[in-house]
Amino acid sequence: MKVDNTFDKTDLLQHLSTAYGLPLQSITFFPEGEDSYGYVVASETGEKYFAKASTSVPSGRLQVAALLRHQCNISGIVAPLETQNGDLSVPWQNFRVSLFPFIEGKSRWDLWKVGKDFTDAELAQTAALLATIHGCTDAVASNNLTVATYDLPLRKELHMVLEAPRQIPPQNRYQKQLIEAITQHRSEILQTLERYDSLGRSASARQTPFVITHGDPTPGNLIIDAANRLHIIDWDGVCLGPPEKDLVSFTGERFEVVLENYLAERRNGAALHADIFGFYIYEWTLNEIRDYGTKILFKNSDTQQNEYDWESLQDYLPPDRKSMEDGIAAVRNTLGRYSLLPK
Picture (cartoon, rainbow, N blue to C red):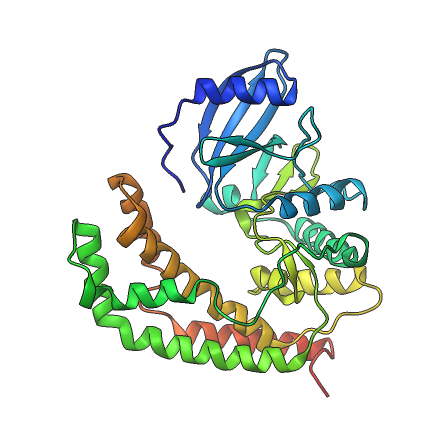
């Protein structure tokens, strides 16, 4: 969750109105997300849009979302709108800002926060949507699209976090707490990294065909609207990768619901491997340590943001290796019931 930026939203609103040719009249900060700034924008005639300001989303990823929505005709894709010049984003200060349709509904994360969840039917919708996206790879694949590797993104940042106790004098209580935690759990983090790298070598040896993956179909990016239609938002992580990269978000007690419906939609079959699921299970934990650690140590200037990031990090320090290994074993058992294990 982000704390709002201090730039002038009135000027941003006018900038968007001009670029998109829309009579926009209000802009309200939307306190969700991690690396970008989101705003709900309303027009004079009542239409609502979602504006996203980011410094790190290449235009090619927005183009993939647009192609999936319009060329492949996947209605569940929430794709960026075009400006009057046909662009998918506009420059604003040091950001690129994109405008999307605003989806009125509840995300899976909204439901989780009140002790609820998607129904089996809604999970089935989700599985079918991901299978459809994966099946459109040949239609929209681009040479400009990032290709996943079985290696930790921004590995150097994780090592900077691990070296912080030796190199960084803490400037606030959150940095002090983090440095103490890293000192205490450094060996466990390194063991987790070693296991992750081993899983990566095993995953790479599989030579699984890559598909277009959303990259982050986590609860906050899945929305059910009032008509019970599913929408998937936030295409920052779209890339060519193994299908497990998307499906790992659903491993758990109802993984079988997702798997069954995913396989039914991908009629040509799909090769799925427990060690690739394991690779992404471990990657999630390491990325959270890297991401929140980097923010607290090197990026944050706001106490409220530090507090949120520190609280979020508590789920991953120390890394829960037993839980991760149990998760891999459960996935392996489920794949075995569907005869998806390698012969």
